[in-house]
Amino acid sequence: MREKLVHPIEAAGVTVPNNLWFAPLAGYSYHALRVTAKKHGAGLTYTEMISVEGVVRGDKRTMRMAAPEDGNTAVQLFGGAEPEKFHNAAKIMMREFGYKIVDINFGCPVRKVIRIGAGSCLLKEPSAMGEIVRAVKETGAVVSAKIRAGYSCVNIEKTIPIIDDAGADIIIVHPRLATQMFGGAADWELISRAREMTGRILIGNGDIDSPETALARLRESRVDGIMVGRAAIAKPYLFRLIADLDATGSYVSPSLPEVRDGLIEFARLFIATSNARSMSPLRSAVLSTVKSMGNSREVRGKVSSITTLDELIDALDGWHEREGYPHETVTQ
Ligand SMILES: Cc1cc2nc3c(=O)[nH]c(=O)nc-3n(C[C@H](O)[C@H](O)[C@H](O)COP(=O)(O)O)c2cc1C
Image 1 (cartoon, rainbow, N blue to C red):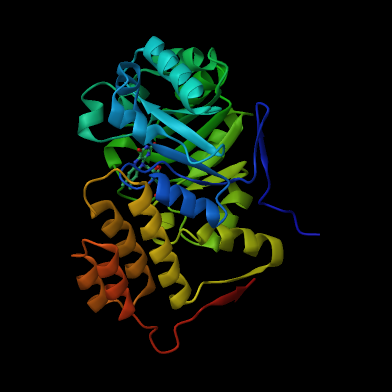
Image 2: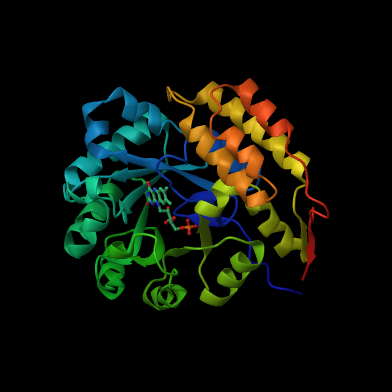
């Protein structure tokens, strides 16, 4: 019998239904997209990064962003090298929202975050990473730590043993340097190396954009699970296709009308749940999906200026499958 690559994960007493997770994506992994990813089979979703500073100050916008959709959500915290602030913020998240899994952002490379000594800047101070992990662990949370390969040079051989030793239950590796931002390819060799360094739950992340790649990564790098980011914005149904391919050896991509109906459902949910004053986050996500389906130039033009649900429905109305559009069945 073929080995099953998709399976539940037990993390320090918390059961996650499967090992296909939706990544934290600032500007995208808000409530509506997380619910949509889960509806299509993601086992765990992460919030957008949440400022520990904002949490401890009780900032209203931060708290709204941090609200989970259900129990299979992890909150991602970011902040500078202030373990106590992480500890306090984690406690507030657990008390206010019932979070069980608290993630620490050790990977964000954007200037605004680096400037305050947070995100990937902490990769330059492995001992501070250990202190933060330990401080969050003391709250009783299941601790997840999301790292990059290093800041400007690879240092997983330093960071992984330190966060492992400090008690991180889950280690997520995005194998790019911070200085690379999103350039170049994610180096999965480094994830295989990480596997040699830790017996903790190891999640691999980076450039997974198809069911085939997902299963190959799970098989070859011996990670416990994978995390999908950008590809799941365009194709939130990817999680289901990965699980189908693993379970049955084949999958059927959704037809264009199915994708269109899914987008409208997602848009309704976005409008009902988002506190954003603008439709811009919705437009970005819808455009990603539309682009991924091809035959969409005209529709893209219309979608990029929508301001209401009715306008979106009108825009998508003119979107038809190109001749021979796969509605693909793939068998391995
Ligand atoms: C628009 C965008 C926003 C992101 N925001 C976050 C974030 O808030 N926290 C985080 O840990 N990583 C963040 N990431 C990184 C992703 O979680 C992920 O590590 C990266 O995109 C690689 O995975 P992928 O190739 O599947 O997208 C972000 C990436 C993008 C493209």
